[in-house]
Length: 123
Image 1 (cartoon, rainbow, N blue to C red):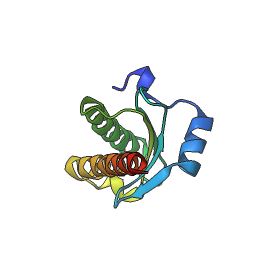
Image 2: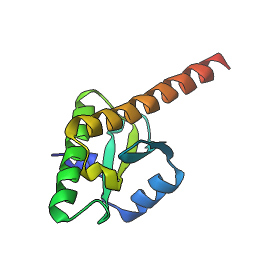
Image 3: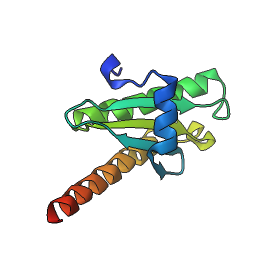
Image 4: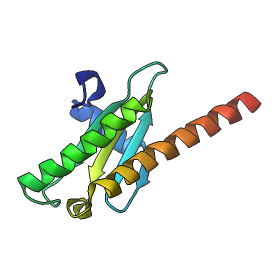
C-alpha cells in the first residue's frame, strides 16, 4: 500500500497533472508525469474507468498499478507526480506486462530529466 505522502488525493491535482504533465502512452496504460520541487516524495494517482470492467476487475488492475508504483518508490523515484490511467486492454493484461509498461514509462521520464539537467549544465 502506498503511504499517504505518496498518494494524489485532490481532484485539482489530478486535473493539473493530466492536462499539463508529460504523457507516455503504452498498450495498456497512459502515464502522465509532472515534476515537483526537488527533495519531495513521488506521488501517484490512478484512473481506472468502468470501460476496464466490473468492480472486481477494476480493483485488480488498480491493485496491480499500486504494487508497481510501490516498487518504483523502492527504486528511488522522487520529485514527480504520476497519474496512471488504465486502458480497457489492461483488464486482460497480466502482471508482467503492466509492470514493464509502467516502469518503462518512469525510466523514460528519468532519462529525459537527466538529459535536461545535463543540457542545463552545458549552457
